[in-house]
Length: 124
Image (cartoon, rainbow, N blue to C red):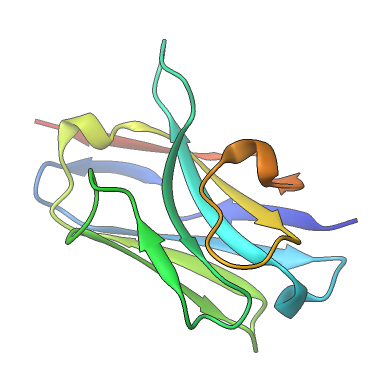
């Protein structure tokens, strides 16, 4: 059973930056592709970014491409989401997820484990 704990959320002004972290435990980190999703009030959960087992393949949603960067540190069993040039529309609860599927995984239904989420609020 993999446990995921997110941190790093908060309140930031538009144009600012945040770095989210997701610490994994209870499993072999390198066996899992990792992803970030977000859910705004009244909206469905949406894909943000994913990184494969080795970190060699990454993919970002068009809405965040060029502003957000996903990365992983296997020595620390942690995945990160660096968020720059934040916009009010980025306001959401951000979730970290892990999947045993290989490659680039963008569908939330294919993820096996989820964190509790961390709130990101961007003020205009």
